[in-house]
Amino acid sequence: MKILYDHQIFSLQKYGGISRYFANLFKGINNSGKGYGYITSLFSKNEYVKNEPLALNNPVGHKLFKNKPNRMYNWNRRFSRWSLRLRNFDVFHPTYYDPYFIKFLRKPCVITVHDMVHELYPAYFPDAEEVTLRKKRVMERANLLIAISEFTRLDIIKVYPYMQDKIRVVYHGYLGLTDQAEKNDSLPAKYILFVGERWHYKNFQVFLEGISSLLQNDADLLLMCAGGKAFTADELALFEQYKIAGQCQQMDVTDVTLKQLYSQAQLFVFPSLHEGFGFPLLEAFANQCPVICSDSSCLPEIAGNAALYFDPHKPDHILQITTRVLEDELLREELKKKGLERLELFTFDACVQNTLQVYQSLY
Image (cartoon, rainbow, N blue to C red; front, side, top):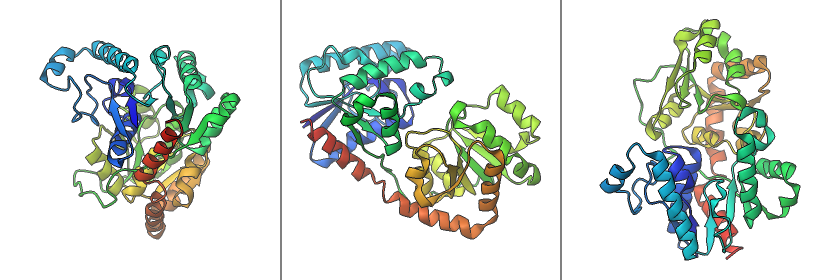
């Protein structure tokens, strides 16, 4: 069984959860002995496929596409289109929502739906209408949809009830070591960890309001923000307003430093209002970091009894739960233990095998 993955997410992302998911899935399928996957990109700067034998992943490609992301995208798009026309595959799994392939595709198609935030929260996104229309076309063409959680499955049905019968739930799986990361002495001695984007539904402002008094009362306690780009002017103004400007830091991270951040944090806080899966939960579990998170969307489905929950709309409740975990070392140890147990439900092998079942049902 040959699975064709197109160029899209590998042309768009250097790092990122979706490209990591597809790169790991591609490798897992090839290692399974039950399928052969290949990526229709000529060249990619994506960190997760940099060692794959793409045709122009060489000095020629680096020179040809240096500082020319549009050229790279267009060339990869043409190559994907050409690969579709050859029809030398059994199942097509596009990696994002560009409907460029629809008129050329004559084979079964599977699309992974990561969330429905553009459809359900259009006010957050200036391009919501365009993204929604393109995504809908791709979802309608697909023979089967992979939802990454039961919550996401229900969100799809909420927006497109007529697609209900072609949805299959396949959870993400964690691929990585579960032992402790090597200690990084340059990190602060005591900090709360926030990971990823901080805008809109990620609920960073309400979270900050909730924990600000903790930082004010403990000069040794810091807030570390991993990824999500540098603090904005509005965020810096908030830090000044709450008198915590010297206790908030942002870091661009590699996989190694992110692992260290998790393993040395007092706790990881995930205050998001809406997630399709919440992969940072698995990262925290794997690196023995206590977790507290919103009681909304898919987060209780994924974290189960391995996290404590708060109402993400109530700063006082965020403060209450954060304080409880910070002050109770035995509770933190209990959450670490439960996190590792919970992680066993989300192995990467299970993700690969369940995805293969989806492919095989169309093969």
